[in-house]
Amino acid sequence: MTASPWRTLAVTLSIQALVSMALITVPVMAPVLAQATGVSAAWLGIYVGVVYAAAMFASLLSGAAVARYGAIRVSQTGLLLCAAGLACSTLGFAPAMAFGAVLIGLGYGPITPASSHLLARTTPANRMSLVFSIKQTGVPLGGALAGALVPALLALGWRGALLVVAAANLACALLAQPLRQLLDADRSPERPLALGSLIQPIRMVLTNPALRVLAGCSFLFSIAQLSLTTYLVVYLHEALAYSLVAAGLALAVTQTAGVVGRVLWGYVSDHWLGALRMLATLAALVSISALLTAGLHAGVPALLTLILLALFGASAIGWNGVYLAEVARQAPPGQASVATGGTLAITFLGVVMGPPAFGALSAVSGDYRIGFVAVALTLLACLLLLLRSLRRSSRPVS
Image 1 (cartoon, rainbow, N blue to C red):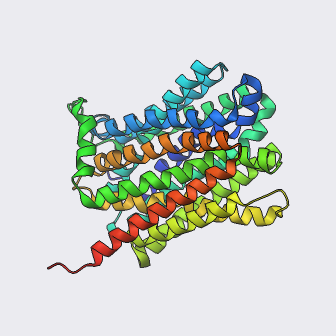
Image 2: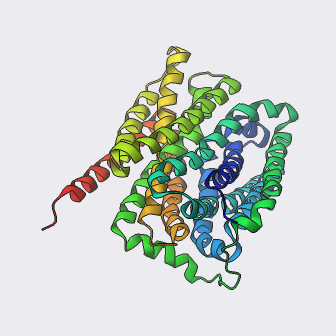
């Protein structure tokens, strides 16, 4: 019995959405947590950096773990770790929240390599950008759920809100269990987990020119994506005087636009532009959107602000599916999870460095707008890298 491509897509999409919601829950409730714990919201970038440092480590091990235990079992473990991380954060003091961030990162890191392994086995080559993009809508979908639901869940108290999201992750792990035997039928229990497993994915990326370019672009795009996701609520609340509920809904708009963008860009990439041209177009859109976001003020009509943020979200959050599908295409046969783990380690490095740098710039300058200007410059560098790569690929072979 073989797995249906659409059934596999539905499973991986659901898992991705729940772990993404777990990751974004703390940033969404940051102003409330700052009051409850006495920790400045400007330190939020450190929390996100810790999450992704752990995710980077976990992604490097994910290829070997998927081969040994199966992609569904690895995904279930990720969901359990995310639930445990949220539960730790309910203790309300910095060391416990830091440990919770580590657990969430260890749970989040293997999810995308595991899903890439499943989708690469079941998806026709001519639909890979679209299918991978649909799966990756789980990331902004999780963010939209967090932005829309977490402020309302705060009626249960901030600890109650954390526990509800943790319970949702546990429920998803249980619901995935009936599919384990079918989707993990290719696992090899004798496959060892060794320190060499950490090196192989990076070696694969560094020795493959196409994977190097994709990894470098993902490093820069991830800075923009996580800076937007991490600091938008705080920026709107503190700089533009939005209520926490209104700022959370604005975040939900960016995430929903990211969902639409991921599917749209995947379709456009498959049918017209190709991966590199699509990514170059998105880099330009992110740079422009970040500059315009930096120029927002309280007098700008809310509708106009939401339209701008929708464009920002569609481009800054919408790039991942195109990127991951191209990684799977460029990977050696049967090595999609290893290549994805290696490129994601570099993606996560951008996340580890980006939000803390955004927070530091904002804290030093006293203005979150400086952070958004820095994001615009970062994506301008990404655009130049992609244009250079496109010029090289279009040169005739002598």
